[in-house]
Length: 130
Length: 150
Image 1 (cartoon, rainbow over the protein chains, first blue to last red):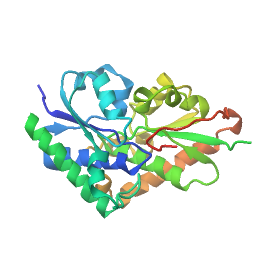
Image 2 (cartoon, rainbow over the protein chains, first blue to last red):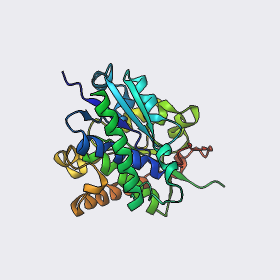
Image 3 (cartoon, helix red, strand yellow):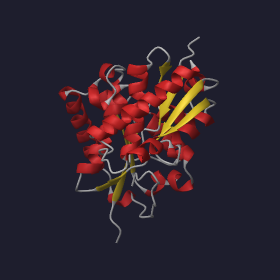
């Protein structure tokens, strides 16, 4: 059975932090831990379909959220995922005061760099779990 | 009198290129369309948010933009919020093979051909917005969400 850690970002569309969450997760699952992790569409999880619940329910999950609404963490939890770690983009962003990260459409160089930092945090957690 | 606004709601799916295209095309409409004001909402807020978020499709005539034929944004909007005014299935515009590409998903991996796909989908969204009657807007207020989607 596939026991890859499920890593789910909010992909929020209104602010750059949603894009940072999305790109960080994709870097972690594509580049840093492809054998140990995968992502699942949050929009699919929202539907509540049986197929997606089966992919989440009882699995170790890491969520990455761009705003305090914590959409990824809440939706994964509601779908039965075991949320091992809730990563908040804003916590990392706070360590980089004064930098411009880009827009919800495109990251600037600083945005890319901080996103990679978040991806490394995700990867560390994946390696701890799996 | 309040201005007519249209809601555009993207699936933003993380597993395949179609989701990325849906997100970028929706952003492009929000940023560049000047004739009609557009607003959006993060899809997972239907469950993570409150009544205000679930009123989205009741307040605005809403178009869903989905990356694949699972139509998650369409179905979730209809399930949690209300009737939609139209829907876009990106896979019908860029082809199923492209939409379900799981190798190229990140913004940084997109090439010119993918940006052309974004433009095609954007055009279809704009066309659909143009077909919506201003009478379909309830005119009610919507405060938007804390992520700044509106």
